[in-house]
Image 1 (cartoon, rainbow, N blue to C red):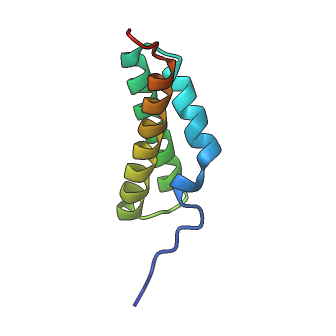
Image 2 (image 1 turned 30 degrees about the vertical axis):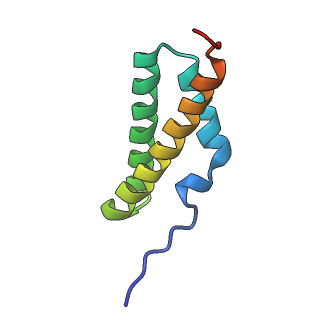
Length: 84
């Protein structure tokens, strides 16, 4: 039985996740969404270059994107004023 070990699960990269969410939150909504998608694409390219399997890349990047978008959503909610 062969197992693929992920030496650095993407969702444990909390400083990276928060930084991307903060940068996206500073942009207009459409630009923020595009920024997150672009960052996921950059991570995909990097992971492919170092030889991680497509299946593992897909799994890790789904998790990473979910973490960034969750953090982004929380930041957006925090910046909204009550009654706005």
